[in-house]
Image (tube, rainbow, N blue to C red; front, side, top):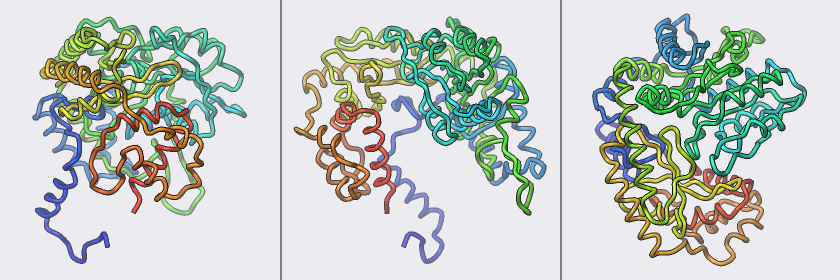
Length: 473
């Protein structure tokens, strides 16, 4: 029975939360180089938390009932528009929802019988998710394996009469490079097709890096041909999770993102987002973060981030057997190994208290490790480089991850949809993954090596089964 027979005091609840979080990665301090974004300024987090809680029970479903959300959203969206070339925006729960709305608006505006969207292989999977939900085909084009940027000529060759949207990234997440937005947008405009810039990571970072002295090419709605752009505030805006903005150059396209239904006898339904009822807590937290930091605060964070990224790139390049992929133009750095198994390196770093994000090989790009540099990284960048160097040497001594013989072939040949959860759990245990509750974090080098050897479709099936068991009862 999951529900207690009687109510429990808050002290008990907090004690249990602490127990449940025992194996969680830390969200502050910079030792987790993905998923979390830290300013290093406790007063900013406190301001966001207080306003988040103040707005927690306000429902964004009906802006006429709660006019506070209208004013807050106008201010937050207006701040993003000021930074990214104007436009008309919607506050959303995150980059995936922002992208979903951009794809919906493009689909509904174009009205193609067999709609497709053209994107680089480095574009975020949120576009694939949106396409899956919205009945749109994905046409993926390769990137240059020296620069990791998409080529405008490849985009042009992929666009056809059913294309509703062309995508560029600023930057793409895997290697932190900025696609040639102006060239891609020009191709889209010439074909009469909408162009979305995925700036979920870079939208609220690149302008501050530019102001701090970085060479950042034009990428926003000021670029001719760009019709929409997404920008996450819970990344380099440092707001609590659940905060993103999608901007449209044309207000008519923003209206295409909306949903309304009058085909029932109940209350009026008009939604600006995929969600209907939703807490105004994330909106309040984003508003408070922007207000607490201000222009000067973000510029200072930009300078610190720029300095930390430069030091990290130089430091990694100086470690024997490691090489940075491409020329990162933001604060995302990916590095591969020569004679060093990067998946083993990641486990070694984890044992030393640092999380480096593994990325599998794909479309000619080798397996690598990913680091997101944030405002707090500069204070610990030398410690991070020391751990990476030590972990690289330890990984060199250990050698590549040892995969049980025949396991890759077994996984590839097994109909994973047909087996039951117990059999999948046994299969997982054979490569060292304990799926029992409370088992903690296993070493992942063997798991990642197996996944890396599988085609993308098989990887996806394995991951779905893993998630299903993880949340099973």
